[in-house]
Image 1 (tube, protein in one colour):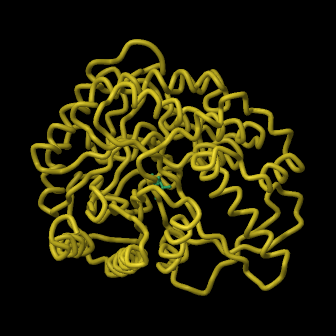
Image 2 (image 1 turned 180 degrees about the horizontal axis):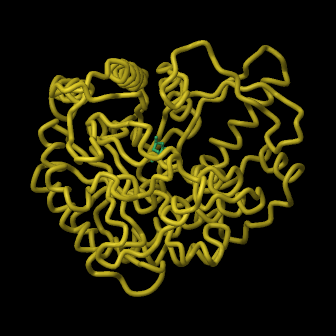
Image 3 (image 1 turned 180 degrees about the vertical axis):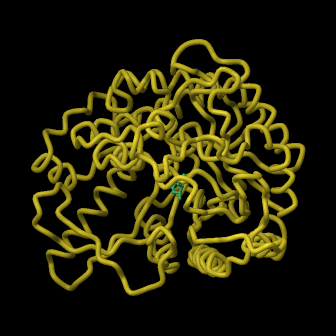
Length: 446
Ligand code: FCB
């Protein structure tokens, strides 16, 4: 991350989505290997192999990044490569892979931004309860310390978790992502333990790395009522509490939002995961907040006995291949709100992008005008927020490459570079060339 006034243009990926090589060099099983191997969980039975074979092709991929003029690269470290069973001694070959990768970035003038946890929990820890079990906090802290000791001299910028909302709620309450559970009390514990693990890793970082910055990445939304009724307004407020404030408030204010605690206590269970000292740990000072933004949510209140009591309404706008509405102005709105309510910290857009049905047409460039328009709209929205005084220090497009899009498998393409999976050929999309020119026009760091 740069100092105030500077700006980093980059791209983001995640280990499980691009590396492949899921059994190479002593890597252990992760919850995503198990989930993908379970019938009916991932579209077309796709798995983490071959993904983009980035584990073997990383040098070419770094060259590709350099050719696009990327200044930063956000990648994640696979916990089961470092600790195959989630505890104990480090696996040297796993560490060597990331050391080589980071050195390769630095040689090419690309600043690394490392995420410790992008959803690939060692399966052995899931067998002990995963994020729903408080013991995971100690395990994560041990893992984080190993990685800080190994890479702290090379990597200045760190992210503890990617999107703990997804880890906890899609993983443990809605079941669409690994480990695929449907149990709200477990999800609430998983969310709390993710935050605790975050705080513990921040503390470990301060003890071990003299010169560096650390933050967390949240997936944040703009929750809007579908209609003018007080019920719909309350539904939007419930979604904001559940999705945004449940994470922002403990991190920045050292407390859980009272309205959301009340909602959970009335509809789930007593919220009793919090112990003395937990909120102090969770609210350890961070150096920046990573913001992942894809889409706003329009909701109306429904009385269907569900915990949140709302349903989504589709706004009459263009949608991506994920069915997500495209509303760039919502990103300005979100950043202004963050600046107002959680103020005193720099923000980095650690993911933003879109899936469309891209196809090879035999030429050297894959035409993806809709993605160009999506990126232009959202980058302009970030610029607008900066003009309004919000301290945003970087933008990382999701994603560099088409990759394993979790439960959707390889069918949903988010890359600015097309990957022809049978041959592993990388073909730039128009959006990659547009992004290259946009970065060049910004003139390096502005
Ligand atoms: C985010 C994830 C990322 C990718 C994008 C589309 O929630 O962090 O891995 O799946 O969505």
